Image (tube, rainbow, N blue to C red; front, side):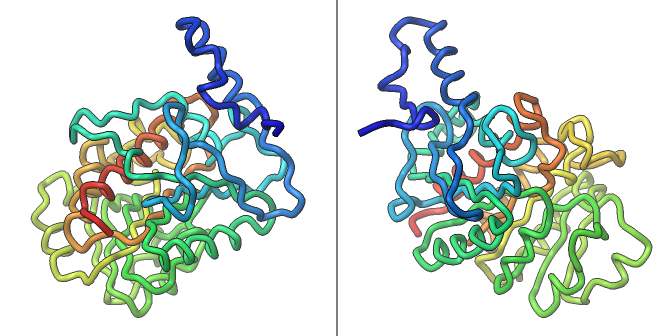
Length: 303
């Protein structure tokens, strides 16, 4: 059986030839373009990371789904979600803080390409939820978040009032919280439904009491939305996060952990990736966030 170049595995790479062999293998994995799809929006599996082969969707505990609009996108050459997928090849897969390997729980990864990619992704996410798999969708902007219509939402967003979606409609009718806000348009906050609780970035800096009070009564599991604009500019290193302030890396991780251990998380989206360049610190940051999500799913107990 022929093997596509983008699916070259470690067993067939020159790893035994030393450090140079490792880098040669990484070039094979990350520079080859994704094979063309017959129809836009088809789901294409790949191995997230470099150390191990991904799980099949049916056997996975977590499903990473990357939404890509352009059919010609390629690993290592394209900004946005695929830059994060590519950066997973350079991530370390042992979490020194938890003493665990997040990918050991069973993680599958898929790419949805083309003009119908978002529709295919959201259908796949609903199937994952039905099977007890935690879907994690990685997209350009908050249009991804709109696809999760039935769960309470906890949004780690730095900016409220982006024009990508109708945020008031998104939150209507379900208990929700927006955490880490430091910028908003004039009409954004007043237009939000009364069922939405706002915790500012400064509130987070001053302690976790307000966040605890927000999360404690919230029914779960929730949908967790992470926009990279919640991070401080020096941490995010993307055009999405420009305003002064924002969360540090450890504040983001602490907030995620509180949501996972509090109401619990059924699905996740990671957005605000549009300005991330391949082989950049921001791309590696995105990959590390995904690994943290897998780690929190693992530590949250059996599904």
